[in-house]
Image (cartoon, rainbow, N blue to C red; front, side):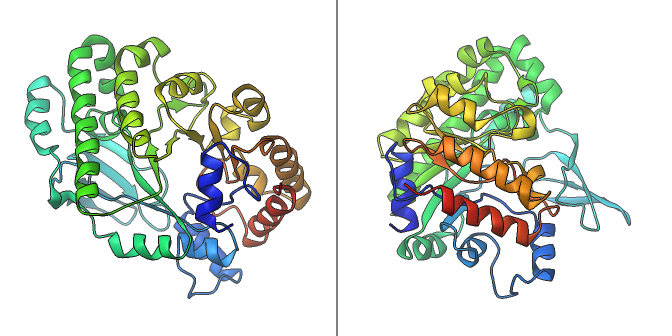
Length: 359
């Protein structure tokens, strides 16, 4: 089987020749470290690293710009940081000197009232101008037997992260549900309408990867009741849209997702990742509860990958041996791979995944 066949088989709840093995993200600082440890300079970041390590070839890419497209501007710059405005219109502080990839600090947000939202939403309309120039690379990956994920944000995340901010956004869910509902509808409409434009242009992809960190270390950011009253209908609408096109939909959500999984299963998502181990997720337990109902991706602790080979072997073998049963598991880390993980350690984990992940 090639990568595309193996991943399609897995995301269809079938048993392939072995579990798929891939990553969604490596930190830039990780790549810098690995180059010092022997990763050749000609190896491209992203799926080039997958090729080098003989992993499955997977390409995650946004097909369109889902932001309102505000002009980005530098407001302040010092030796330590840069403060800019983003394409979403929010003000963000980034750290310099290798720290920029760490979590940025969102300082201010563009929408603080219903009136500001009504003006803001005028920019969230699907147009061909929002398409990104990814067609040639997508075609190259697919022709080589690789799997392409259309990678976009699910509709709630930009509201909380960039439009209103967490404090105001979460409060709006409770105090002004009609306003929040309109925001969800607007971002959902744009997502679906842009995917229709992609279809009309003859562009294709193999699966959908929707990013939205709607949980934290102790559970969901809001109650299941709020999810069912606000988000559920839009998540279901999105999943139904892609299901009609035979596209599996993976939900990226950091944090503890144990309370969240039953809700997204009902909405129609195909899989959940990255299953952060340090947040209390354990794929061995999740497999027993959700086998055949949702694909599980990840849960290999980056903290363990940063430790000893003995600990790595224990982590990989114990989790892969259980999670692979009957299919429905993808090997990957429980987060983006940080620079604390050496090339030798990561290569060893991949070797173990192949050794114990066969059928």
